[in-house]
Length: 356
Image (cartoon, rainbow, N blue to C red; front, side, top):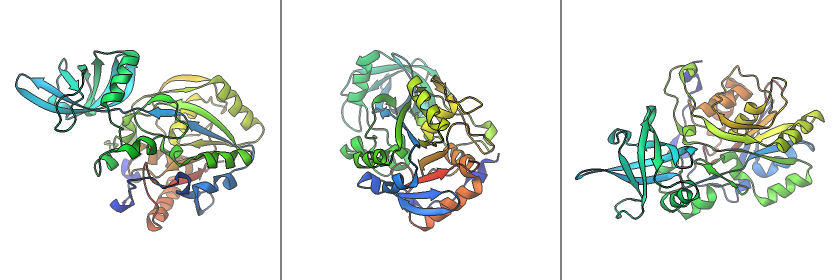
């Protein structure tokens, strides 16, 4: 499909730079037979007893590193955003500016702004790919490397926020779900940022189940689609896992007539990767690069709660596949006209599958 079909105009002032407070006071646009303006706290009334919410319990790590590349007297400032671990001492990363680093060169991380070099975290550029991607092999390994990244790194705010303000202490909590536990993501599963203990209690009281999967979201989620046709776009793989107990529980929900409601596109992509042709979900673990565009037949997920996404992005393509392109264009027009807040810290939508 032509990528320009998924374009739309978004005013700059619609991009949220801070989340709603409290989290569950964010607005919620319900997209089904029509459009309905609600708030996230209304979710228990919008679902049915016996439905199951599926959350991504990945935890964001401080994956943005500032460093120096030295060539004799020449020094270049390099920023690396880690996006996928491939070994105890290896991370794929996006480098900026990538053209200033060659394969085999060393980067000393820990340099931040105009301060002196503070750390001893160093890596060798083992490979370079397209779009600024590189494979970094660190001198440290395993938990020791994790500790060094935590000490030297910054919260990897999305570029549409980071370009407008620096990260701060508030982001340490704001850009993390309250149920995050499996470290490895470099971007938050942002639909989950709206949930609070109070909302969880209300969902429990309404008889709505809660289940967890893990997909370590990569920085590739923010990459623009540069191809003119969706068939030419390459998704970056992300590691995920659906446990046997979770798969069994979700199959039981479906068998007794309940609906599987994915909280976020990350949970949805993982469940669709784990589902067979009949829709039955199996235990699953591995890397997924599933790319969902209109024409895709959904097998596992009946409803989707997700934030508002960028124009021409793979995530807007996914929601257009789920609810219909014209439906989503109308929903986004409504959201823009009625002051909804967009992107990671913005408001949410609750989408019901067009063919369900």
